Image (tube, rainbow, N blue to C red; front, top):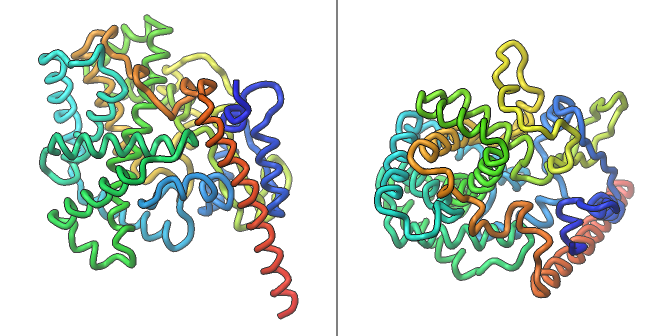
Length: 406
């Protein structure tokens, strides 16, 4: 397995990712704390700050998302405007009663017309998600050309976010330009004039609604069906519960898949105030990391643990983040995934549901298979991260020296 994969997912005996994080922290002149157990304590740590900090999101994700801005990655005033705009759009959407019907219609159509691929694969899952959320947002059916463009652009963004290669800037720019045209001709066009940066307003639709859900939902469906195949009795129970429209049980299955194979390898915050964690006082300025892919927890697949009404699941507050930086579309995303799982198992035989087929760039199944080009790209990115950390550290020292002089 390549060294760059060890850094991304901390696999193997040498804890390469931990060493890399600590080296970046040393260059930046910052303290770090890794929390890999006690989900309630981790959620409290995440909720104690709304700042992502100067590590993974700043160095890798923010540049990868360009020309869009990501509400998940940005900090400061830009994040606040994105979050407020996203919340405003969410309040306008009528999705609770529409999602299940839209997904059932699409999935049944695929099942009847004999999907041209070998199975309902990763691309199919992404397109189902895109098609559904587009119609919820703009109250019209997405055109085949736009569907293909936004799907292809999600692959390019996914590749760069996952540090697998430079995304095709032409495709990403075409998607952003087409999104501008769509928004200008929609009920959301007034937001372009009101926003401090028109691209911020476009990003409210592009990142959390059209691009990220394609990436994250396909990742979660890969994990969900992998676990259901490993446990046929659970799959039979899911079929039964889907037929009964027992969304509570389907949600438990989704949440258990997220717990065991979270789509994000690691969460981070920079503390903006002193916090007591693990029985000791952690100073403001410390960078907190929660490596969800290395979390110390029960590895068995037990959806029923999410159904105890008297005692909430300990991972409940960690699955979608915590505090002000919690995923703003948590309710919409959960509803979408539950409806998608139910629709798939009701309408499509298990042998044809293969979200892992064609699943590229994100997800642990894709690592350790890099060619020379990908490995060289990753090496450049990680060396660049060290250089960027050095620059951040030098800038911080200059700021401190200036304050002392003043």
